[in-house]
Length: 398
Image (tube, rainbow, N blue to C red):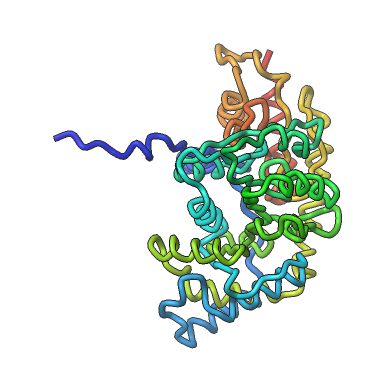
């Protein structure tokens, strides 16, 4: 008897970041020395004070179900954090804690989008945005931003992309994969476009908020003309090196928060009670606790950009945040080695994995297959070795 999987599954693409990580692990298991720079994960340990909070929660038997949106004290702490760091005014009832920021985004998209609704997605974009929109049966509308504009879309581009079916825009700042950071003026110009287009929500993904090399982070949700339509997503994975703890959260208009609670209640219920106790300690830490990691990332960024200048044909801008560089590799398209033709960045990624033993992610996963995502979330000596291998492998292409 034939069994047919859902058409929904067939419409989804596998995460290229996870696919490249899986492939690199397979090669490592075979004894091959691979440098894996494909996954967006800080290489630092979770701060001890956060770990101690989790241990205490275990000892105190904080091991039962919590409210779906997270326990009240945590949501109150997140509201304080939003006010302290972002000047955003939320009460606990506007906050939903989820199993990672990815679930927060999915909850929000599923709460807003009906089949056929259009979602504006500035490109390059984080890999899961498109697939989450597909799950909601929405239509992604890609708005391209090139390296010449530091991968940031303009207000005029967004205005041209709006149609009567537009229901949502989703973007990240600092951005994964480009590291781009929108400044206050740029976001005010974008906000003016949406102020004149009522009925459109904005999801602002600010998970890399504290890995910002140019000063104070600015949240689009503080702009009065649109603040009632902004969903601000954040979490603990990046700033506090807590990827495995799986804690994300959003602040949203009350009706959106209630909708997210309803959806989450039927899919996962609340996130881990112990992780929530750790999160309570994390969000109440002074932001200065994140500065040490941020400063190391900036030093690594500068070192990687310096070494990239020595590789012919690589074109990179200077990212202002996160821990990625998104270089243009068009120079190598059409080149070949030993019968292997490079047709796009995906081909180049597999070539570099095979000949250079370095795992990166092709730009197709983020909306443009003329680029690669290079994560510099690794020790400096590893990054230096990775650039050496990449340079030697690319030199083989003619």
